[in-house]
Image (cartoon, rainbow, N blue to C red; front, side, top):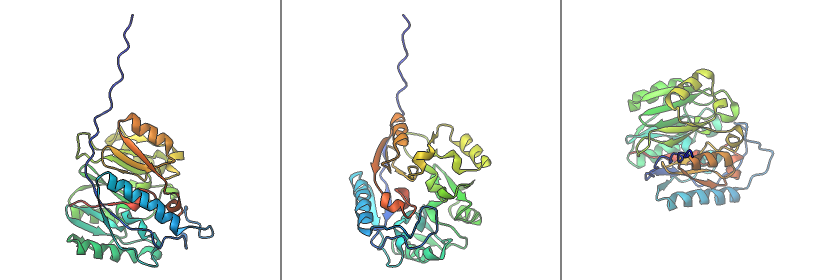
Length: 284
């Protein structure tokens, strides 16, 4: 009788304690259209947005995260998407300079917060939208371009942080920020190597070649899951907070030894944001 070899055990995942910045959506609404998700003619509920955001906030606290809050500013309904407020690494904060006029006042608001917390603030020369387009994976910063952040901001980013910056071209308007098309699953600081999940259809072929070469073990996510911003997630290396409707992504994460935690941010999706959009990582 031929013995069947046991299935390989998943990699041992180790959570790391995260420090993040969030902004309560007290002024959330959709009053203008700057991305394909936004429809000002459709009703939105600020109360529902706040209630859903509170679940995400409590989830992070339950995971032991250090959660900092920035005060929301009236008239800035998208300020809840804290990830766009800058990029923070090594005690330095590279501020955001937004593409659209409706969001431009958010940049100074976040930079003032960074300065008050003792970060070395670098005011941007080039247009960029922070962690929306800049993702740290190990020692490398993946940087998106094509819709929001200008390619010149990638050079500015590299000069500030002294890290390798890898430019990736986004080609699908529905995935206009890098953090809607890539999820960082392992940042390389734990026991597992740095790794990601991504949506292939969001990138041009040269960018896909880079991703395939650098991350051969990446999770490839379906367009159905990406369409509910399933990739717009946040991982501590073991727990991965994702959109609750991203069921196949949830399945793949479990198979790889992660602990996916689904949350419903459907109201904030009306503004084009999800879990990661609401989460700016603070790295001292």
